[in-house]
Image (cartoon, rainbow, N blue to C red; front, side):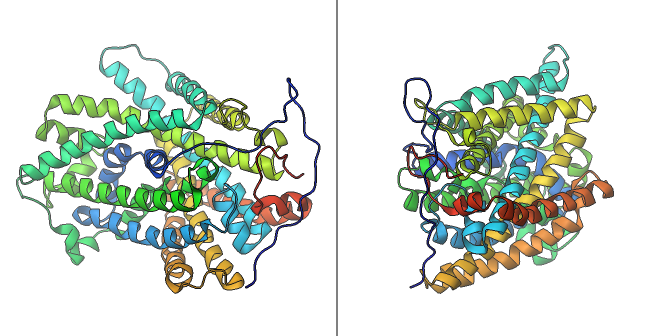
Length: 496
């Protein structure tokens, strides 16, 4: 059977640090599926989605039928996950999306995907940085504390994130595990209270099971908000080098994260609808999209639960930031090892076995972006969060669609796996589903960018240019392009 062969390795001089030891270019860890699930589910920020995105999806989307959109999104992403995990054993490095796309569609497409991935994760991290600064200030002033600019809190969070990202990945995993359990627990308490009391005045909702309700209003916009809630689950493969058994751990973590997120969102959105009733939920969500979930907690569980939820809203955003920081740092690290970025980005810490240089680069990029936004006087929620999250949503869905297409092409060309469901049917359905969602996102880019058509067009142009630049970069740096899908053994210098 045909296989893809890598170019023969060539040597490259390696800098020798103090002590005479060669710098390591490989990450190490013993992460199991559970630890990776904690990190990628934390990136999805479950409480933030329930308290922030669900009310908007209900009000602007398909009303009481909105919970069904999470089921649809989970099914489409499950098709993606089938092909993604089937190809995992044939992609020998931790480059995630760009490694898959490069292996299946060629080096130019792979490098273009790498640029889109960097843009997407830089912007989604920046979006959450802006939001958390605003939210901490709101929380502090709400309890009688001093009012300070949002960016002061943001920079403080950035420093804490940078310290954790610099250390061994298992420290971040433990922090994320605690924060994730807390935020999921408070929402499940609310869900149990609503269901246990039989819902609100109209009882438990059945709208999400009724086709006419699911297709009412603007289901396309509802699906758009639903798919955005899953951003982060796809990053399991970036932790390949730190996984205990990559060929088993990565697929298990991917499926587990998707299942947990899908069930949690569907259940919790249904509980919120049931608490207010099918006839009132759209009006109430539109009137107070930022506070309706906290109000629901106060009504069904008590004011103490509402106060706890406000605090956990902040920790949910911090967990998302830390997770995105870890993912982005590993993108910088992997691209440093290929020679696309500076060789220093591909070095790992001799004691923490972490991508410490790449982590510092990630922190600096985040700080610069936030300083620019602060100097420009942008609103941390209406502009920074909305605009940057819009860029990231389109970019990551585009990457998933390209990854599905890469799976189809790779297995068709190589024949290394001939199982029809894993290599043809599911990836093909994933391409169709993700392409339709991408069309919805592009059509509503202006909405994603706060209603600005010029900004919407600018995002589309930015991502298209980034993808096209991959082919130019592949021609300009052919050796780096060859290294795109090549595994880097421990302590081996990147090939540049």
